[in-house]
Length: 388
Image (cartoon, rainbow, N blue to C red; front, side, top):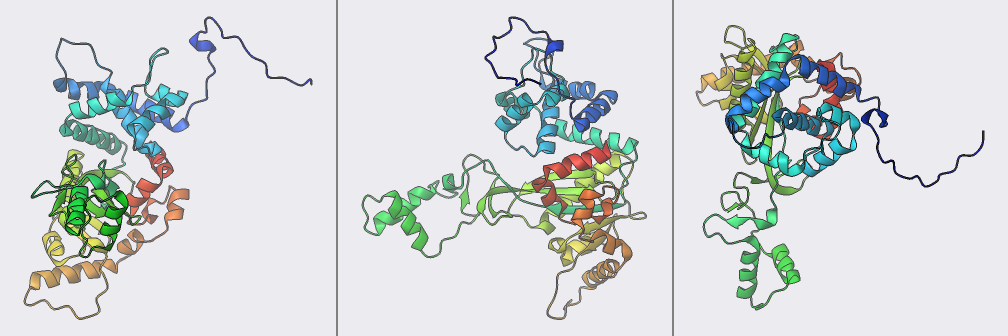
């Protein structure tokens, strides 16, 4: 065989679509595409989104089903940037097929994603979420018997250096400049402000005193990697028998787990009710959570209701004193007894590697599944492949 040499090529005047080089496609996205088309995904999306568009006048928009497909791609690929999502879809022929783009159609740009997200209401997104759960229930992938709840923190799209005081509207840099001038530095430089901020006493950023002017709902919080930033708190409820997410709520980052759990459980109950898997007091669902959700008030509210708590209990160095609160004592002891059962031991079994390798054993996942979902996009596709 003779040596082939790279030479300059003259561009073709006309190339048909069938002559373009094609990839074999991504098996997961091809299978998911078939499931969505067979279930009438695009027709359902267009019906739900019709109220947010003009009935007759105006240029037709891009199909809203394409927007939700790009959200799915961002979730499965672990892309949290709209520009990065646009680039990823434009760079992959299999993702172009998943978006149902024509031969001459361009991938929607990031500004279209932003405009569509602001146009569609939160209720529309929740209806799409419920539609997906119904499709899962049709294939027996919603059991509703063991529900795990966990939360994490995600960085908000707002800079911490732009925060202002709630009472006066003074910015953080303006406050440092004023303090430097009061200390005798008439024209402080950036180095002077950094030095002053590092050495001053009582340095504390409280959400009661500071807020972001661009994102008032963001809160100052410490992320999982130790950084302090403006953040939100996503909280998920998952069917531990199948890996299906039955509730995905977003809370402010300065609320504790015991404060946000009732809203997440309420959302999970509503979604399970839509697929005829509602937990009741007569047939309660197992609630699995880590020790951050353990409190007397939370267990009292759950005791005797549709959720049978199996919440990990933190270690106590002293004897518990109840001060006549028999309801709290009964709820805590009932939860402690259930933690010794085989169901709890299986639910809290920390074997994450087995869960990744052997998807036939989804019960062996840890309770911090939300954090693993944020850190491992490949796991999202693996769980999605199991569901599909």
